[in-house]
Amino acid sequence: MPQSPATAADLGLMVGSPPDPSQLVTTASWQEGPKNRWAFQHVGELVPSAVVSRGTGPVLPLASAPEDLAEITLDGVECGATLEAFLQETYTDGFLVLRDGEILCERYFNGMEPTTRHLLMSVSKSLCGVLVGGLVESGAVDLGATVSTYVPELWDSAYGDATVSQLLDMTVSLAFSEDYADPDSDVQTQDRAAGWRPRRIEDPEGSHAFLRSLRRRSAHGRTFQYCSATTDALAWVLERATGRRYPDILTDELWSRIGAEHDAFVTVDEAGFASANGGVSVSLRDLARFGYLVLNGGSVGTHRACSPAWAAHIRAGADVKLMRETDFGQEFPEGSYCAQWWITGGETSAFEGRGIYGQFLWIDPVADIVIVKLSSLPKALDPIVTRDHQRAFASIAAALA
Image: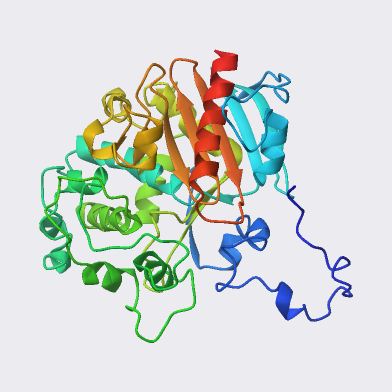
């Protein structure tokens, strides 16, 4: 069962005394359990972060209509047969179910509160995917253009002749290891370049240099390759296309428009380049607001995340053949990946943003349900636990439809 972060008294320390070195949370230790139980709610204290402002507009109201969902049965889930057991077993920090703009269930664990900004990991990618839609429709970004058209520095990298559309749908082919547990993997090198881990002498100096160092594996557009670096390359394109830093684009084009209650944050490296792939932290309700707008065709009243056409583009998905050999494709035979979202296909056409260590934004258009779950699982990625989350969300939506 999840445990709360240790207090000074728990550690046998007097307030103001030096901390026990074994209890320190640093960039070398913050992502793994149990230290991530504290760290995911305090990322700005560990990694430099930029503010993503909510702006000055009105907050999108979310009515409260509480229902007791604790005993909902979860079909095919190993990590708890009921919702209450599942939340306890999967290191939940925050959980919210929204139906037709009304909060049916809102739970906080592990010291998290409504004002807490929690790290989204790769749910951050889905924010980027929605952000792109507005820039495409305004003419600032051309999906058919090559990356080097916008970022000449990437011309001889893996990304140089890839199109913006291929970045968006993760069909760029790279020689890249996304093994979160391997200290020598490319994704851990990316973390070190971004300031998320202590840097090695041989590492690229910053995210720009890291992206320039990546090389092609095969032809682009033929296979799906989930790669966190690809989202950061996409963010670099957006910066060059608009002449603004990514945190400012995210503020101006998305976060200040959705009726968020709180500012968000995004981590940045030494040069100020944001980790668009996984560095955004937001409050639980604000992520639900974002999901509610996307569910409702991009807008509710004066609040807007994207156009109806872009919301429909996301929901329509992409080529299912590219996903069939993946774990996601095995679970969802009609599934695909489109605009930085996972699309389940099938009868409900549910789609999700998801991140390692248990971050999820699940949207079910048929049931009119948005589910948000923020967590601090001890391991980055466990296919069975990921599968259990998806099955749990589907069971909740079916029970409430």
